[in-house]
Length: 425
Ligand code: PLP
Image (cartoon, rainbow, N blue to C red; front, side, top):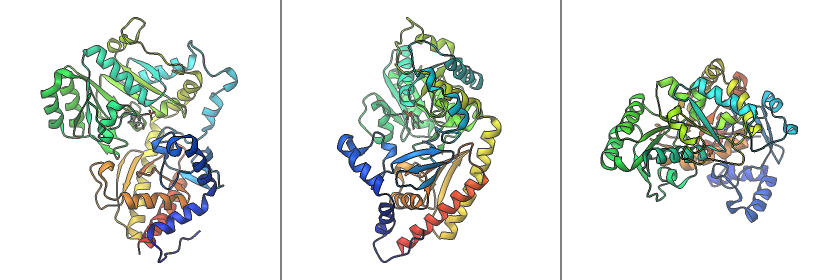
């Protein structure tokens, strides 16, 4: 399908085509909006004028209710590291065996042992149902261990949908939260100097995910860990996304030794999950009578754990490397496509995580981008061309992506860029 350059206002052409292609998604969004505020239960799954309604997904594709297929380069915001409905995971999940009980299952030990084996700073892990809950649990442990209440994180960091952590993301008022600037150790040290005795934990992502794929400098990370400890606070590395970047997470790649680590996404193989890991000494507060009461109906349920065990095991060093190679190929392809289309473009890439910007240089964070309008148009144009990326420009790969998928995705992105340029004429 070709989008014609038109004399109509820019938004109209791309958006109009989107609306024309997706009437059933529109109808279902209107219906959802009657019973669900905003018509969605997840901010990240919403975009204007309305999100697609997806019927099913397999491999690198998802299929909407209007019958279109899309290469999905969000993979549920990195969680589906082996793509959708990965056959070994589908096989491992045996719903007929039952889906939950308040007692142990073998798979939880399998996932826990794999994490302990891979991540040097982790002797033990405790499971939750989401990365948000992992953050909540890490904070609870830190509060109990230190006897302090406050948390220090970086501006534009994201550790989940919890009031304490939303201060960094959205500037929500959070009397328990203090902020430093990413990659600016002095800004953290200043806060620790002034408020250190109130701070239970310092949280950071080794690569900011929601904040725009911004990598932390190694010296910043090491210095932050040391500064947190000097102040008597715990240092928490949020590897909910970055665990995909190395066998032992990003901390293994850069030699970081956090007190606690948050996990999520890929360790559940596509099912809801989170986990906190740390030294035996710290984690003992979670033993019965240890001080932190931690429970949850679905924690470490056998479905999530069976899927997670496969997901982690099959994320081998060779596959991580291959994803990085393919991501490099994609980076080159997207940069060339932008140049050919004559559109300002820049991107950040760390391994298989990419963030694209329609500006000559990437901003310090996606949250202060000045290309928001054009990014939104490109997002819709890409959907019109059969490519799904995150509305904020995040692009990720999965182990089932190959050279042909990369090239096809680049071709679709290239067509979408030309559509955006044509609309702006
Ligand atoms: N931490 C990071 C770095 C994340 O990217 C996310 C989710 O995107 C979370 C925590 C929260 O995880 P969940 O969405 O599973 O609650």
